[in-house]
Image 1 (cartoon, one colour):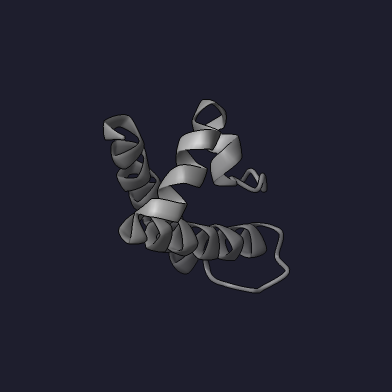
Image 2: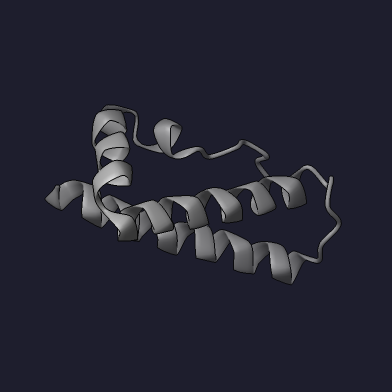
Length: 79
């Protein structure tokens, strides 16, 4: 299991300016970004075992993070 923290600016480095602009101008994007960071921190905490969790919950968190990342990417592509 990788315990790399997957921050948005690391996932989409070429889109850093778009991410910043959309967070300022699009409330839905800002909400998705906040939710992504919250879930990402939970995944990282589970992976590093700083917050104990079972494998099923950790997998659910990873799937949630992936779904949020996909939605964020779709918005970045159309921006």
